Amino acid sequence: MLRKTGFLHELKKNRVLFLMLLPTFIFFFINNYLPMVGIYFAFSKYDIRGGLFHSPFIGMKNFEFLWKSNILLQITKNTILYNIIFIFVGNFLQVFSAILLSRLIGNVFRKVTQTLMFLPYFVSYVIMGVLVYNLFNYEIGFVNTMLRGFGAEPLDVFNTPNLWYALIPGFYMWKWIGYGTVIYLASILGISNEYYEAAELDGANIFQQIRHITVPLIVPTFIILVLFALGNIMKGQFDLFYQLIGNNGNLYASTDIIDTYVYRSLVTNFDIGIGSAAGLYQSVFGFILIMTVNFLVKRKNPEYALF
Image (tube, rainbow, N blue to C red; front, side, top):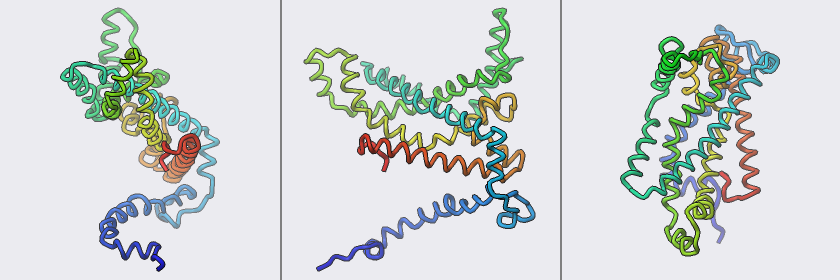
């Protein structure tokens, strides 16, 4: 007797389960798929009187403007550069911190340290922006007040673009290192003590145990987290950049990313066509990137691939 297969058979057999999924389908359709109609804006010169479908169609001219003005190259470079630092340096520091915490003998001290590291995660980017302003303001900032007190020249941080290549990653690490450390620490604490006990009997010191036991066993966690992060490599931390930089045009050369450029195009300049073109480019480039990386990982080790 042949078994009935196919989607309609599954739908009839598990109709209650599919009914429970219906709100999820509706949510994603309304919030993720329906807005994709706005892609048309990227190929038109938006006219408020014509609306979406009656604005003049101009083909690839919005993309040509972005390319010829070097804006696209600049914001792409900044977006990728910062995200590479966030992903790889951030994960390295999180792994390093998790290994150090796992080696602490006192449970109370470990929990207190872990809690203190996790606290910055709850600091909003708005508060961080206020903190940065009060630290580096040229006239009344804490850093410049201290420099003047020691007879040194103050730093004009908000007019020196190159300094932000270090400041933005620094504040990002400060906020997120505790969150990532908790994830890696959970993975490390899940490793059986029998491995370490056997290594000690064989004469392995603490560094050898970390190198040959801890690190190899948390590699799957590391790869999965990096792959998830690479999926958003074309999306910057908009809140971080906007709250720290705002509309300071002096810093755009080193801090402007795709998200902040799209925001200014839509809100400040009201150029919906240019903003939509940049957003579409961001989505397509990010999709191609994650598919390529996942393909390479799958060829090397299928178990570590996302799909």
